[in-house]
Length: 141
Picture 1 (cartoon, helix red, strand yellow):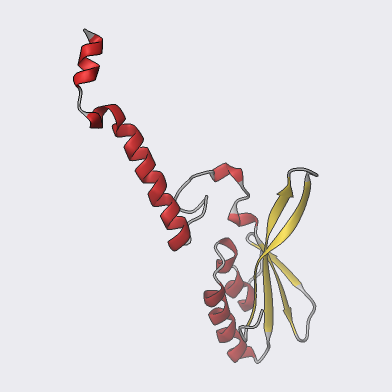
Picture 2 (cartoon, helix red, strand yellow):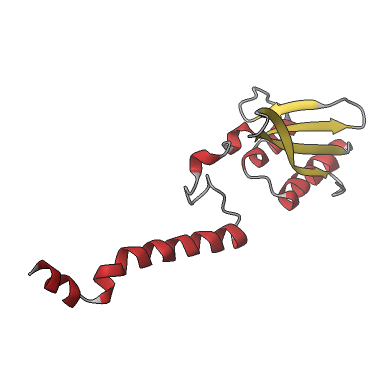
């Protein structure tokens, strides 16, 4: 009795869940390639498989001063940090370069920024930092 009911059910009830899941995964993969989605932003796929973007940090240098280290939870009220901080989570080169250009035109200084993210080598268990983005106020890397 049960077997006959299963064989008579429409195809979409038997494989409907699988089709919806495969469709959703396809949409997520397209968004990763076209919309800047990552495992933490928007999708949740593999969310705990990597470091959270809040752990990114930035090293900023100017012609007059050595490197200044900023991270998301830094307590700094400087105008430079207010420019860099929004770009720590999801860095985009053009947006950061535009922000640095504005600051550079006000201060007359050239700024170099490198944003890094933690990276764990699973074979050696060595934690290091990998560069995500390098830019400067004049757009040069």
